[in-house]
Amino acid sequence: MSDKICIRELRVDAILGVLPHEREIPQPVIISVEVEIDTRRAAATKELTDTLDYAALATKMSEQTIAGRYLLIETLAEDLARLCFDHPAASGARISVEKPHAVLDAQAVGIHIYREREAFS
Image (cartoon, rainbow, N blue to C red):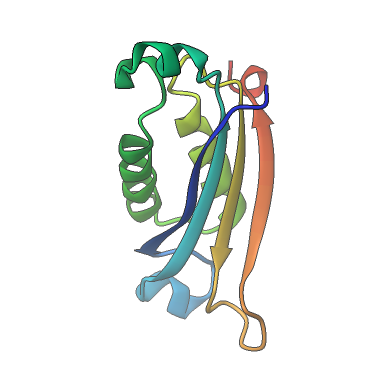
């Protein structure tokens, strides 16, 4: 599949981490997503219902990130991938989660994962 719907650098302030200060004070979390989905039907019908609603997905991802109060960035990335597969036509998802303030001398630290639908079936 070469079609991808993207959300780039979605910023969410959330509790994420294992250190005591990370458990108390929300920090910026930057999320980027590419969801593999065949967009030809939506292009032909011009109907949002025939594709992935990226605004709705971004809202769900923000809500999940905040509500989850995650210890590990790895767990958050897996849960965000799972959200992508709520759409029945999504076949793959590439997720990037970064914490820009986690390491003093680094621009950001994070994780990048790729998952296919079969992993969540």
